[in-house]
Structures are given as C-alpha cells and as structure tokens.
Image 1: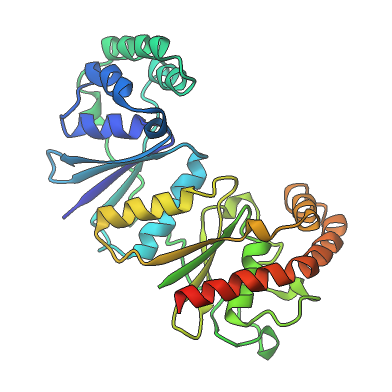
Image 2 (image 1 turned 90 degrees about the vertical axis):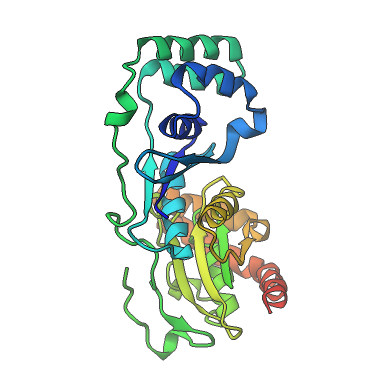
Length: 167
Length: 145
C-alpha cells in the first residue's frame, strides 16, 4: 500500500494529515490541539487513515531541529528498506503566519492565545488549499543517504589497506 | 540486527565505539586514522554511516543526533511500526563515556574549526575514555550476541 508520511517538529504534521484524510477540518484544529497533552505536543505519531488518492497517511512530529529530523527519517526509511516508490515523505511547512503563531503559542503553554490564532487561521484560509498542495520530497527522488561509507569487515584493520569511501 | 552508536556529532565517541566493536581500533594513540573521526560537521547530523559487520553478523552504524538523544529511537520505532518492518535494532548512546577533554576538544575542533587546539585534547580525551568505551562495547556485544 502507498504510504505518505507528514513530518514536522510541531503537531502541524498531525493537523495537516488529519485534514488531508478529512477527519479533522481546519476549524476543528483548536479542539484537537487542546486535546493533545504536553508530551504529545512535543512528540507523537498518528495514523490518519486513507486519503482520496489511496495513500495511507501518517504524521510524525518531534520537537527537534527540522533538518535533523528530516535526515533521520530519510536514513531510517532507507534502513528499514520499504518497497521503493510507495513511500512519500512530506516535510510540511506553515501554511500561513497565523498557524505559525498559534502553534508557537501552544508550545509555550499559552493555549488561549494559540486557540485564537488557529481560529483566525481557519477563518482567513481558502478552503481548498490543501487539495492544491502536493506531497513533495519523495523518497525516490532523494539521494540515498545511507550506504557503505566504510566497507570494513569485522577484525579488518585500517593498516591492511584503506578502502576509498563511497557515498 | 542493526547496532547504531550515536552521540552529539557522530564523529568522536560513537566512531570510537563502532571501531572498537568491529575490532578496527587497536591503537587508541592514533584515533585520527579512524574513518570519520573528527571529520564530520553539522550537515552530517542525522545521517547514518555504515561501518561494517561484526562477528555475529550485526550491522554497525554511527549516527550524530545533536542534543536530542531520544529522537533516533522515536523516529525509528514509529517508522518501523508504520511500515511493519523488522525493527530489531540496538541504539547505543555513547555520550556517557565522554569526558571533559573529549567534549572540549570536539567542540573546538568541529564547532569552531580550531583543529590545532582541539585535536591534542581529543587525543588525550580518547585515551582517558578508552576503558569506558571498551566496557560499553563489551556490554553491547553481549546483548547483541
């Protein structure tokens, strides 16, 4: 089955994944965020269901540097060796500033102000924007970043002849 | 099984541990001859580097994960669950084996590019950390079979 992973360092990944599958519309985002605990706001994983294109949509978020998180996900996807071409990794971005402010305020513990920002975001947002947005950064399109950089066998010493690194 | 040694930059203690595990490191007086030792920067964080197979057939990797020690395990587990893949993997954090000299040397060498100042500290720190790392690797080998 085709799988789509939404990745971010905030629960925005979950919100967009749920919106894509039609389970949580944008106007219900504040309620969803209120339901998340402090721990779940920092890190979480969600199976959002199937979208209209037959993709099984997942969301993964972890409060860390987004570039590091992306590289970790790419590395582990390569390590776990899924069937290539059937996995899409989508590093999401903030659709607008209101959502950025809202999620930042939630992260700071200012839930009331965060809720207000998310409501404003839902009010000012074009309703069909998410359908226009395509999942980018495909696994197939990315250069394989895991590989035999140093092909040394157990017990083999460097002095026996250094092999050229290949990545 | 996969064994992943991870530390802040994935270039000092984790490299030493991986090389000890594979039997590559025999002389702690010359750590700079090791592949990848003190040669990685911020762009390599999050990338897995394959080092080889040990005697039990386990694949040994090195990973830099900055200041997020729980992130690799979390991402690996969640992706493994979602993909329904074989997730047998051992994550070994090598930062408890670090000492002051390794930390300072690594910081100067990798963050500020002051290799001349950082490398002697790294060489000294490596010698001090050797027994701790060897104990960690021995425990890892025991667990991984």
